[in-house]
Image 1 (cartoon, rainbow over the protein chains, first blue to last red):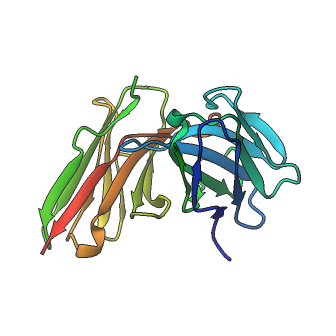
Image 2: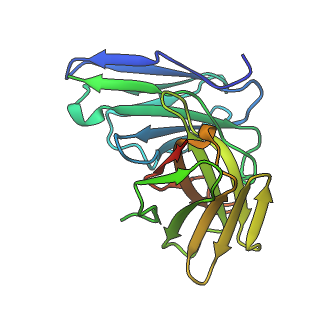
Length: 116
Length: 113
């Protein structure tokens, strides 16, 4: 497809379970971002990749959160030992050029994670 | 500490009239501002942007105004249409150095028939 895709669209996890969320960016896009959107809030930055390099992970809330993009295309956000406060929509976005904030970030539909 | 503030959680506007969505920011290092639109169960979609060297940018029915001295920007939609009903996010970033986009909490716009 032409846009950013994410899977699964919905995920329900029991507290303490590990989850993995996948992002397929637009083909050829160099930059990839992960955001967390809690209910009633705007998206909050988690981490940023330029190709396979994770250049900024300052937004990851704890060491339970881990992201990777080993071949510079598909990315996975992993959350270990999920907690109820991890319940949110996780958004992935890609952009064609690094360091060019005038280029648009294209967002995927998000994965809604519910931790029971 | 919210760096980008959208103080109106919701706004209702009659179809055909002007919708004005407001946004304030606190970080004077921001020099690029964006508006995103979001429908339910979809990701945010880029709408319009403005750099700090301008005070106005227009794209069809959408105009963004920037008042740097007041650290305030607004999005005008005229005329408002039913398909404009959505959540609108104001966002800000540095131009080149900082790739992070900081989002506000959003304003839900209802266009009334």
